[in-house]
Image (cartoon, rainbow, N blue to C red; front, top):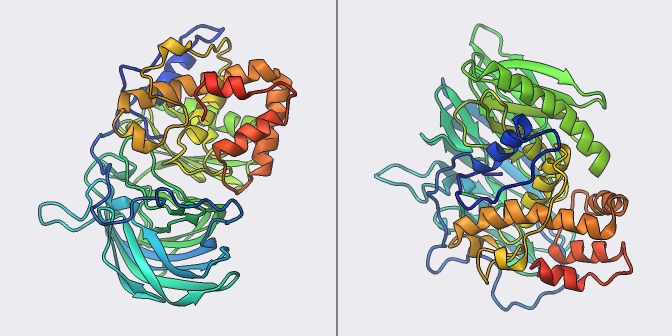
Length: 483
């Protein structure tokens, strides 16, 4: 979740134990600041998403399939600059020959193609395995033409040099004091499915991201003074000879992205009762009480959601905490948390490990499928019972719908937070009331199982819910604007 202050955020029900600490922490997860700058439209003449009116072939699978990333990067003295080589291999799962791929350079989303003579924060060069074009969609998409059409089931690879400069802003790809956040910094493959290539523009106050489950093997060479939490299972070794450098290795299987942070963090490791390693990293000026609460909630939530949705598959999760980060941001196996004395957005971000992480979705075109689901899980965790969906006349506008895309929310920002974060979990609670608590629990767990490492769609979820009852849910979907 990229959180934001919104005066339009509706009041949420109080906890039965009172709206004190847990109530405030739930709202903190929703209402913390995020910069509003960012790209909302594509460059003229550049593909910006699925082709309008394109024939949708239901049987056409998403591709490039089974991506595997191999990355070697070296940092400068404080982790502000990283450079090295990246290789990605992939298979064509489509029935049609694959003639090109697109690399998403999401780290350029705030700055585009550079400003005031400064280059883009993410730069790719020396491409092998294909012919690169000019970066498009404000330098967040790079087309690479393959040397020959890749037939269905065939595999190939492209490689390139990559240089990353961490922007001077407190953001998911940014910095806070001596601490660096590298979320959405690593180039990743765009997805082609029945609707065409997904080359949607970057949004700063939500997510545009859509990726398939991938394998990552990443080697990060950095000064030994920096601790480097990262997606996946990590281990380190110190270079001999008094170089003062350490190499952090990470292996992550079936994840949708790779993120890391760097800085002089304090650290602690716990193991949950169900065997998940919860590794905590925090800046020295983070309130100690908030760190304790985040660690406690992290251990409890990873096991709780493992029972509700299916066992957490990655073995390890890192909590990265600073006092100034705006709200929280989720990545597979790593979450960044703004932390005050009453904690942060820990539970919501851990819920995202399933809703976006394990059960993927197109976050630009269907943001409710991860944000509303994660917030519903968050509310249930804190036992905020008594959810009631707003009556029809309380929707912020006639055009607002839970299933709207970021293309709509880009011009209705206040509505986005009111609907997706406020009304969305209420709709799921209402569905729970219709189906019954036991049936809803079985639906959610079965739905996660059936889409494990796959991609969820609104159509899929409606079908799954309908399969759990003889009652016609058509009126329910219409009432709650699930289209």
